[in-house]
Length: 443
Image: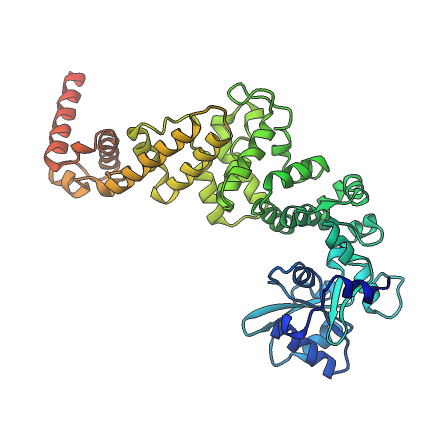
């Protein structure tokens, strides 16, 4: 059966109406200038799978300079130009337009050479108007088989761009596909090449793995293939480490990956679960977990806002806190802020879901009820909630400076434990008692 018959048999007729208008416009303009141009890659894969295609890529025999000239009346960004790719912006949408890929020994660039240097067969699919899907490397069959397979020689494809090793793991998680044995072996044998890839590119693939429906599978696959030791050596140390306060017969790495799968698809939450315990094998868990987390996230070039949120959450011993005690809940809200408290709740919920015990669901329900009641009551939890402020203390004769801050923090600690005391008269009385105790102590 030839390719055309195979495509017809699979009922994979993709028409112009299925293609993004901006991508069609780019193709038509390049065609009108006598260049070959086709839609290529993941967008075609998604169309075949009846999934939404968000990123549209065009491949062409035009050079980056010729592409730029062809779209001189549009914004063209030369990001990736040294790799033969420019971004053409049409109606505020970015389109990646790339010159045909080819090996150094190849002659004139052509579509076949371009597709044979793509990463995986399911991405080595192209579409031309009037012809439909073009598949030289059995990508359609592999889609049916739910198989991620390197184009021709997977080792060569990896050496062309080592990031493709991470991409295989990411695609397996996103699509729920298997990676074929030859590709797995090629990744395992060449895992050290990931050191050549920029931290930014690694970060972007790691984010997609973490936000997929199978983050546990992804992280375990990275470990199995030898990639994790180069990307997150701190997490690699958790393999084979058995903390006394965790589940028996399962190491810390297993616990962390289980936790990932129980959390919502939220980057801050999953990064907190991924990194919050990596200092345990160092036996300095409580003293430097924030510092280590910040160091890792900076190394991977995460945004400052993400680093700040994750570093707040990893400091909290949310597993050990009795969340059924309203006082404990008020204290933790005061420390992390209302904007982060629901994240703490999600982490606790995930921990209870993977822990043993028949009453875990009842615990979750009770904790959620306590949280809702406390948030609804809006108890005093920060300095701005105190019934008195710095000006009141100055009127009482206190000197401006650090002493006022110390006193306000002391009062806040008291009313977090006993919110009913947050009245100006009562707080003044507490201050008077504190001053009298000081005099007795001084004497």
